[in-house]
Length: 136
Image (cartoon, rainbow, N blue to C red; front, side):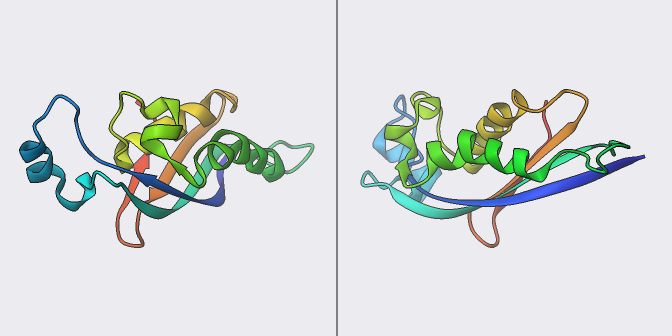
């Protein structure tokens, strides 16, 4: 029997969507107002879910406090109140779209979660726009 536990987190970050190898006109055409050279921000909501068997000794899939600490260390402390383009090395050469942010977060958390568990990341960029990533 497999059960899924989830932990919700939040961070605020600025970013700009653009490609260095494109003209300003093409960036404006593709990314619109998200290509603002002065950046723009979002209040991101994150849900991290871990699926696995219940440990018969503890009754946990995994200790949610451990999951919370991993999210804090790998995401909140690295992304909160940061400019993703300028302050987060993962996005030095990677466009910080919601899709790419979700994959980066998943990869950071995956290396801290045992492979016996399935991992899913849901990243809300706005209340209506969100991305789900479960791994390749």
